[in-house]
Length: 92
Image (cartoon, rainbow, N blue to C red; front, side, top):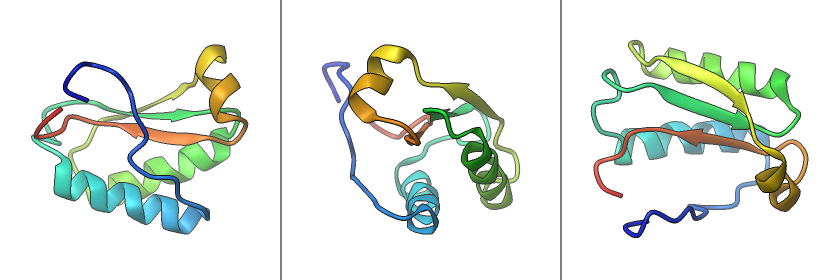
């Protein structure tokens, strides 16, 4: 958000759909994807985060991806098995 707050872009159900939606959003909204690190954030689902990392690396050859666990405050609100991607976008 322009004011620096976080917000959901969408709530998507089903991992295959989630992965493809992340890729599409990064293609549409991403900027200089090969110059900035991207982060996969997760809540106790490292295996799914690793799968997502592979999907992102297959679609963005020069993308540097790091996987990090969501902190307890955000995880309390999002629940277990939450996945997200943080990347450099064209606009805030």
